[in-house]
Length: 431
Ligand SMILES: Cc1cc2nc3c(=O)[nH]c(=O)nc-3n(C[C@H](O)[C@H](O)[C@H](O)COP(=O)(O)O)c2cc1C
Ligand code: SF4
Image 1 (tube, rainbow, N blue to C red):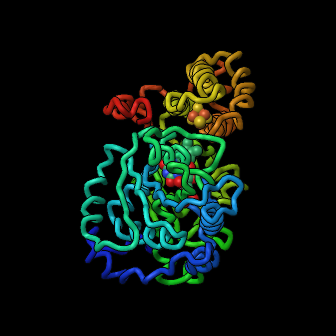
Image 2 (cartoon, helix red, strand yellow):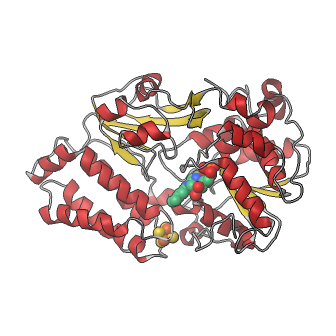
Image 3 (cartoon, protein in one colour):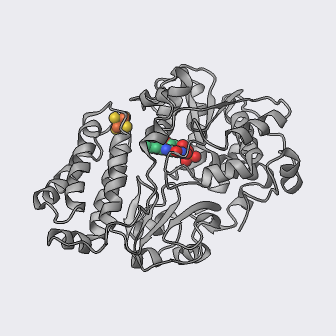
């Protein structure tokens, strides 16, 4: 089902043809959000950036904060940041949407900003992204309106796309997660800041046109609408698929051309997500509660099948080594805990496995989760814990000194090379 990618091309004309113009949106009045908030609430829209948090709650929190109703608000004008950073290497949905339907996202930004009373909005896309030029063209095409939209390009680091890091980058030029305040309280330059994923904003542009009931008419009632899914790994035609939430995982894999090898397990949600056994995944639907019940997580809507002649522990090892290197180095459990976790996982991934390392992993997982300033260490711990459980047979094989793979197979999970990441030396220190 296609709602987000109906346009035949990225120009304004090609966008307006299927969607029509964005209807005028009421602005915020008497320190209450504009009337679109009722439709957003009715729609049940939940954020597509990974957390699936109810969107209307965030809108109200920002307005409350800027109206002085929050504990630490400075009663300053709020600001909107559209998160198009797509920090997850296994995700491509946001780049596909930005390339195919930039005006839908820009419409969503305009509607969202007006509703919270913001006149300034920033669209964040990671530095070096191939979609930047197309977005610049789309911005140049739009008539000026009540909201000034600026394209910003923070460094391509995993944690730079976390919402407080992004707010900090827009305000101070350093993409580090900052604490203890949340962006809705004190974000970019101390202002109440609404951070929404670009796909969330594209859905919002459709809610502004068709209303909340229309939006909720498809999908799982607890998290309605359609969602983009990045499907990859051992499937015949990897890519981005739009489906109503609640679509069976089996159907998603079929739409990606089917598995190219017996599936050993699937990664759900991305590198901060959870592994599931093939059986559990095939019994689940693509919505937050069904995936959670089966031990997975929808997260950034990534479904990655691992199968064929690969060792899943070696796949995990490469990802965790990369994730450990993405720490912003501000919190001990993240800065020291993740490299230790990575070393121990490496000792298990290379047969014969180090028995003590396996025991240490167990302890370390409990020491990093929940201890960082942001959720980065939690994501890594979840990735490792669920992987060891899903691939327990492989772990046992390694303990006995063998491995089910010939180990010369190329990596199935994409891990950006250090060269890609540090091509711009300024990105190294999150500036
Ligand atoms: C380490 C880390 C990386 C993240 N990367 C992204 C990202 O690339 N894109 C994104 O939209 N959200 C990302 N998030 C989630 C954002 O912090 C934020 O919750 C989201 O942009 C809010 O938008 P939503 O409510 O529309 O989902 C990340 C979170 C963490 C902890
Ligand atoms: S947990 Fe890691 S990434 Fe998050 S703020 Fe602390 S050091 Fe930075």
